Image (cartoon, rainbow, N blue to C red; front, top):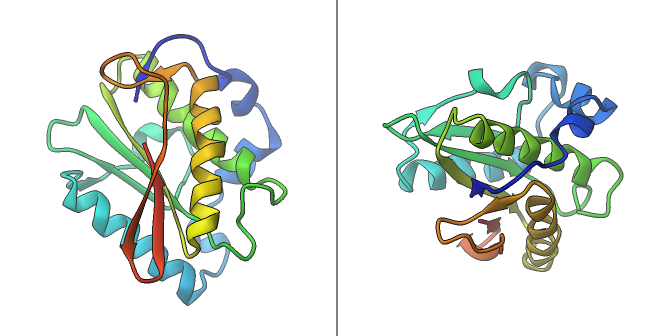
Length: 168
């Protein structure tokens, strides 16, 4: 995605959801299933050329996977979302991921990066489809577009028998 205008970064950054995003991994226990999704998402990001882990530019937001390419200009932001409790309609989950999207949009608008990829890994194909629809709208509200200027359009891809990813 690339920036095409002003998003909702200011309202998201000041919210209680943003403050919750600042929690570190040590603040909560990670289930084995969530760890599997996170590792699969991280491996996929690396296979796409996002070779370096990066978190310093995200102003305290800590999604599950943040990687940057070798040039430092393209960022991968990803989150593992368990279908049983991290669905798009679950309280706070969509808002948490919108805060991640707002941060990616901020980095693009301020030309700290040229663009990137945003992805959500889940363990349910139907839920991945729902995430694709929701995150397409979230990214549209951020004013992001692809290299050709087209509006966001998340796709769903099966990464393994128990892992689907909604990405753009």
